[in-house]
Amino acid sequence: MASITLEGLKKTYAGNVAAVKGVDLHIQDGEFVVLVGPSGCGKSTLLRMVAGLETITEGTLKIGERVVNQLEPAERDIAMVFQNYALYPHMTVYNNLAYGLKNRGFKKDDIDQRVRTAAKMLEIEDFLERKPRKLSGGQRQRVAMGRALVREPAAFLFDEPLSNLDAKLRVQMRVEIKQLQRRLKTTSLYVTHDQLEAMTLGDRLVVLNAGQIEQVGTPMEIYARP
Ligand code: ADP
Ligand code: ADP
Image 1 (cartoon, protein in one colour):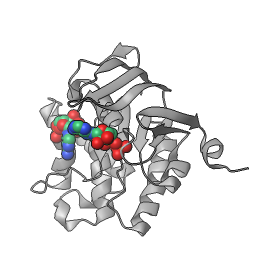
Image 2 (cartoon, protein in one colour):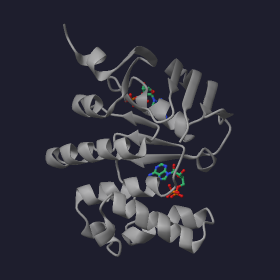
Image 3 (spheres, protein in one colour):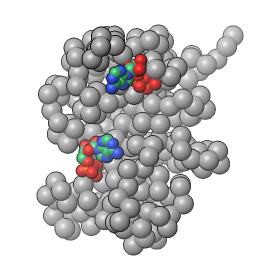
Image 4 (tube, protein in one colour):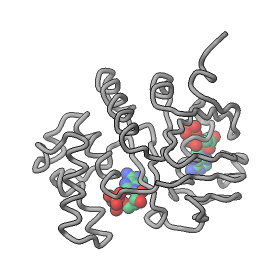
């Protein structure tokens, strides 16, 4: 794992829309940071810049000590978990997990070991030969996380991964992500609208407002009202 450092990060979209207006943030190696704030405040833009899915208008982005502004998503050693699962419907769970590794030229034995380790951690070993449509929403979400996990990346990004799940599953997955985090100590940046998710998961919360950081603190510091 590695740290993530944002220095004066800015994004201005065409038409002069300033979505992110200079964000400084250091996420320590192994730290779980949750990004919260009202709709339109720039959370998604910020996350996508870190992922490399959106260009950076100004500022510096580092993974560990390495400046990655100019690198393609695949070269950044970061894995992103999406809310729409982003699973391949025609492939089995096994192949969904293996696909990215195959593309990156990993050897068959290494792929097999990584897939089985991730499947075991996420308790989806019994579904490896199934297609996504034969899985429940929660199982699909675990496969989506597995796709990120097999890469053993330097950091994880989560873009509202639980927002499509029903209330009961959301609670269950929240607990699972927390347990996973305790075990793996993954450096993570997690975007959510959900206050309970933010409070349960975050070592530290960052409140974004109109493209700028308004508040940073532990869940207690942010949400405890005297
Ligand atoms: P959030 O994720 O917090 O809802 P976004 O990052 O999606 O916020 O959006 C931040 C601001 O940038 C909003 O004003 C939004 O309308 C604008 N925006 C987002 N994506 C684009 C885009 N591709 N082109 C122009 N403006 C955009
Ligand atoms: P992986 O190697 O994680 O299995 P792919 O090789 O399918 O992913 O995708 C290549 C890149 O495209 C990845 O870096 C990932 O961040 C990005 N990507 C994958 N799925 C989506 C999606 N649904 N929307 C946007 N970007 C995506």
